[in-house]
Length: 271
Image (cartoon, rainbow, N blue to C red; front, side, top):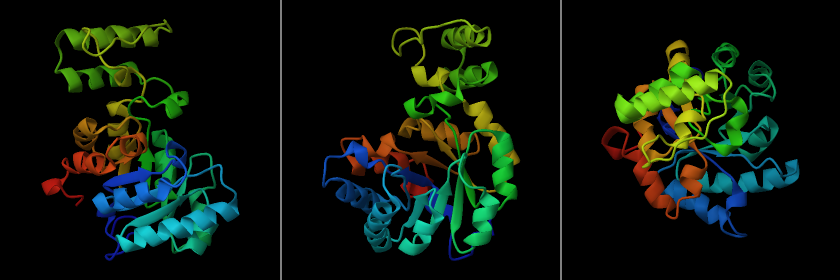
């Protein structure tokens, strides 16, 4: 058994963890988009709509739960274990600044608990307090997570080498990293112009992800700029799966987006 997972609750559902943002859709398009993602193979969905009142969140959660039930997927409610219980969701997802995992575990023992973490210390704490899995990030650049800062110099170097295989581009990445470490201002180079893409200099990096996966026994999902082509990088760094927002919902074809992500798992299936 991994964490709180019973035999009937395989953590394989967590390979791709889709996090919602209904602001990306015109009125009336959100639920159809969710159903498309579920129909295409998403088996874990976090309802993260922080602007809603508890009453409105519960109403939406009940609608989404009908869809996840139809497709055999798990539903997690962001930050509201009470809403998760009432809506019949499988779990709750706790932000790092939210309620302690241990307190939620005591009061809601039937729920699976995911926890967002941005450091090894917080990841260890979440595991010790009874989290079933953690989401760690941002690994690569993502506008909503830039507050967690650029990666350490070694993380930038590792990312560049992973992507470019060393050589001139790696050297360019190391020069940028050195500028960061010294507090200097730099302009990220543009892909295709002899440089490296912005995501390689703005997230926490693969080294930090690897640090966490090596120290944590429960599943670790990588978050932050995880496009389909980066899934092999985070899996090699020890991640159990990937968590996405824009990678799924901003794609012109949600069905194709899920397919592209799924290709990196066994036989193209989320196993």
